[in-house]
Length: 180
Image (cartoon, rainbow, N blue to C red; front, side, top):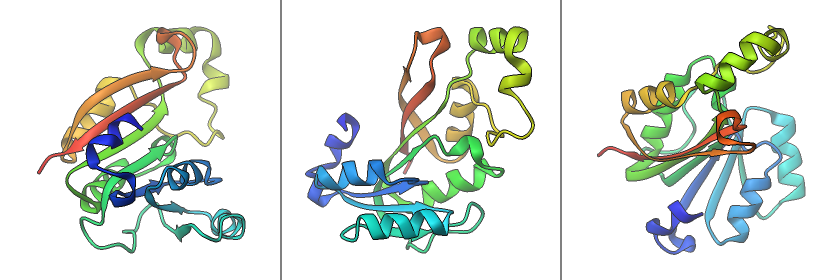
């Protein structure tokens, strides 16, 4: 929430939750007064969310097609634990860029994969962690995620590791600004 304060009063901030899942964050942002829309690739999830939260907006999306919003529609895009599931990460980031207003914020989380954690996984948990039937197909380090961001018109402004001790953090929490 701290990063969003600079965008103004919540009632004036348009926010997109990309990959909203069960809508817990859509509900949180809506309750805080933001103008929020949730998207997800699952029609079942969208239908459940619309039924549970009829006062909120949800839109079916596709991982490889533009969302049905005009350019510069949002002040912020929030995406939590989604990008590691995508085949075309650059498409998603280019879509985030298209949808954000100049100097808009991209706030995302993705599982953390730092050097020490990766070494432990490789030595003791490789088959369990990288099993071929698991839904995670991308594994980001701070450096690789920074490269994706900068290649798609974003400047990282804040990084945080969350969950567990820093070397074995569960997730990276990142805030980026759209470069004008």
